[in-house]
Length: 414
Image (cartoon, rainbow, N blue to C red):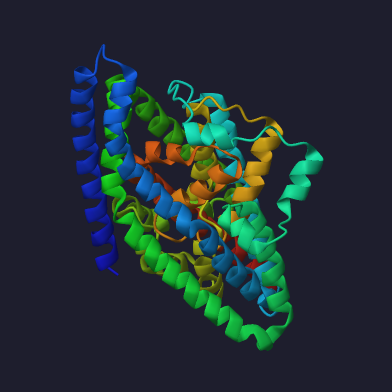
């Protein structure tokens, strides 16, 4: 278990080094191009933009097949939810409610703080050419349903891929043992794609270097204040989310919530320091059982939560997606933002436990709502700092879910 956090820490170190190098070179180029023709400047910076563009294309390459395989497997395996009875129902109800609260809180806060409003970035030419006019309600509803899975994947229409995956997953579950070979095959394919995701993420430092060089060369060091605000506002959001989760937990287990916090303190710190909620998993299982959670509940709820209930990652997805839209001056009305929230509710399930999965899910969401995917590069440099808070909150979210479900089962048994 130790090799994975160490590898991620090395990647984080490389990203921070690339970030520092990009800041320095970007500042030098900003001074060099001051007062010169912007066309000549942009042409010279194209070579640095290429580094981030290649990385983003690789990310987009895996989004649709990853969503399809993981969502089908997740839905098909939840088809056995009747076999696990009421525990499964209570668990999924809590997960769905928690995910909605996390996503909705991110949407509210990013609209309140407006962290991207100060960026004033021009919309890339290719994105401007593909941006569509606002759809009517009828057009939006019909657009959700694909005429072809292959066409949806080719165009990265993630919402259409989700709809097909849901139907496919439900049908697979309904056929029972006959389709076990299909589930195993898709699960194997999903793991192959996840391995590819790990390889692709190794190029993140190069993308960070290129993206930050371009941003600083064009905008100057003043843009760093926007990043500071974004990080600070996101962590304020995590604290608010923490308060909401603890309040909801208090309604069930009362003052025992303080004992729960003492037990999960160490796993939360492990997740924060390693940028990995998975690194805290073994210790978290032990501490929850010491707290008094039923062993059977822990072994069922906690693993399921690592795919379906990552509260910190959920909040980040709406926060980041709308931040990028604000950075390009793209206004999204309330209806569109709610649609985005619902899309994220679906696309995030099953792949939330993947390292840097939030970036993959955000990339697919940006494409769905015609927001320039290039904006994802804005977050690459600071993502390790954000990931620390996300990982720690993910541990806390799964801990309170396990404690509540265990308490409900104990209360029923009495």
